[in-house]
Image 1 (tube, rainbow, N blue to C red):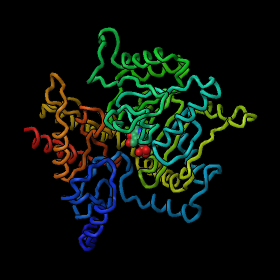
Image 2 (cartoon, protein in one colour; image 1 turned 30 degrees about the vertical axis):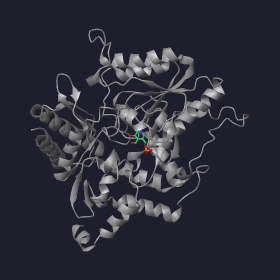
Image 3 (cartoon, rainbow, N blue to C red; image 1 turned 45 degrees about the vertical axis):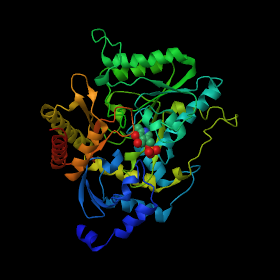
Amino acid sequence: MNLQLTKNDLSHVIEADRAHVWHHLIQHKPFETVDPRVIVEGKGLRLWDAQGKEHLDALSGGVWTVNVGYGRESIARAVYDQLVKLNYFAGVAGTVPGALFAEKLVAKMPGLSRVYYTNSGSEANEKAFKMVRQIAHKRYGGRKHKILYRDRDYHGTTIAALSAGGQDERNAQYGPFAPGFVRVPHCLEYRAQDGWDPASESYGEFAAGLIEEVVLREGPDTVGALCLEPVTAGGGVITPPEGYWDRVQEICRKHDILLHIDEVVCGIGRTGTWFGYQNYGVEPDMVTMAKGVASGYAAIACLVTTESVFELFKDDAEDPLNYFRDVSTFGGCTAGPAAALENLRIIEDEGLLDNTLAMGERLMGGLHALSEKHAVIGDVRGKGLFCGVELVANRDTREPVEEMLVQKVVAECGAEGVIVGMTNRSVPGFNNTLCLSPALVATSDDIDRITDAVDTGLARVFQ
Ligand SMILES: Cc1ncc(COP(=O)(O)O)c(C=O)c1O
């Protein structure tokens, strides 16, 4: 791999990239003096860049996507075989991989039965929002149309998805947003909301109770759905506190509110179960997923619903508007479900859920051990191979460290050859959490290298 890289001079590629590619999520000014990073090849958790440097990727492709690791020839072959047979037909018809993947997927999701294909997480969430709106118009005279979303959660990049976005720095300068989206408080116990009495209830019950306060304020007859991440990702890797989900489910049932779980990050194994919500005994009405569905080998996202949600779009066939009048052109690409089928097979046959639990425990253990050593670690959170390390200037006041210092830690880990992430343009003042989400194939050695790099990075920046 490296041999080939050194033989091929990629300086032209770097110049073409510098001159013409508008990268995501990044300020380009530094590229006037330093080369943009160009990734050339990957295998397992390892990546090689245009300079031939090897990196250990503790972020699964930068945004927690490549769950089964890089270089999977069997997925490439499955996609090739499908493309030469049939690459595409619009979603008005079925395809062989589309039907087979839907069947396999819902078998992992008891209580859910219908799969709607799209091509990005944002788009899948928009489909769910549209369903809520259509149900409101058909059943409730348009009234039960509001969609609740949570502070610190993220549901995508389009204007409607940002309207349900709980990260104010991400949203800044992109308004005005779509009406009918209402924010509820976050559930991060480390930064508990005012008014909690630990003697009377758990923080989870209290934080869920804050959602009900919003429902009652808005009027339950105006609230159609509650959209939540099972574990908040880009908002700081927030695992829900004890008692949270039971109470959330109760509130939704009591007020006839659809529960929409955004599994775009947690879905397909990230937390050691097929879906994040399955850690908490939740029974959602709608689930969206994207990144890990085909581990980035093809673009695919899904919205999965219960049969009773599906029924609402078919029970009045006399009404010409009573079906889901929506399309996603690239939701009909067969590469997505073909890759997703093979991705699922790999996770099952290689026992990657069990590996995620075991390696997740090792990673959390390593990070907790680091917190004994580095006073700058305020909180360690995580589930499976999905961990966050919140850095604070003072453990007593929990004042976040300056963002620039967190960036330095990330850069020091990079210098050690390990790619880690951090909360970025997310919650104002709280871009202070390191993010770790290696591929589900990580070994003990990989995990230890990641922990060692964080150790070194923290020592260099803070000691
Ligand atoms: C929880 C969550 N939902 C939705 C999205 C949007 O997905 P996409 O970038 O595929 O549109 C993301 C992307 O990071 C996400 O983290």
